[in-house]
Image 1 (cartoon, protein in one colour):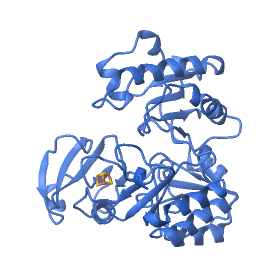
Image 2 (tube, protein in one colour):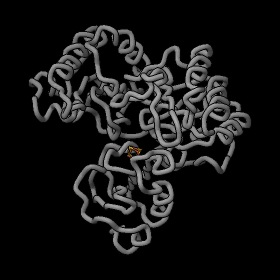
Image 3 (cartoon, protein in one colour):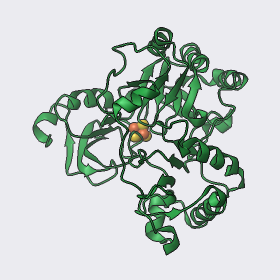
Image 4 (tube, protein in one colour):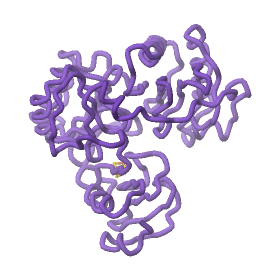
Length: 371
Ligand code: SF4
């Protein structure tokens, strides 16, 4: 089991990671969805072999938490036998609001079929297939993006750059190989994401010709045509609650979104207080990582602090147990970061930016933070 202990990679189902609450296994559903039966089985595995908690991630993945080392192989075997991880795909994130006739599934499948032809990419490397009418994944971390430009043509864009290059299905492979090679050949230990690399080694002009269309989410009415939309608090789900919801709604399949929410396709519209129902906006603007109960890097109870602050402000908030910022990698209006049991505050920045206010207590949130 020693391979499970290695650090410095992105966890997956083959490489579980060890956290304070035990090992966790990350499942990346193919095309972002799973059947009712498979989702229910994941809940059962979480209850039987884990600590009964599942996290939804900002890549649209599921993490079964709190697994004992002696049970890891068994859980992996059951996932494999039930073909839950047959098409597991760590490297691609898809626009979760895809529709039958849009280009998301087409380009996702094409990209997936050429992954083996690309240079060996780091575990964390991520393609965002974001080919609805407007991009919706722009606020999430990725390395290479496929989007529509302002005229509705497909572009490939290196993350961090404002513009991309027009492509077609016919030249997807050569362009993806070239951009991936640029990353692999120029990245280093200190430069691990595309958005960092483009600042140190600029791309040639051919890659930077067309702006993507402005980001815009489908209306909740349109999302409602895909299924019943449920949000979660910070992505954390109790497996027993999820099982109850699955049973009462009986959806055909479940799409997991990178916004820590899910869509029940062809399910009954059930109101359940353990989930966020009838949301006005698909994105919940308060983020928090699992915090000190689950992660040894945290000295603060992130969920408790996030619960408190969400009642005090309408601003976007990110509560991070440490500067790593697992829950949200982009800027938030207010970011709170754990610091030896106290809290540092960053305005309009990321968790690893320099704080403007340092070492305040939980009680001082109301008086010392500009809410
Ligand atoms: S941000 Fe830090 S404390 Fe939070 S989950 Fe990530 S590593 Fe742990």
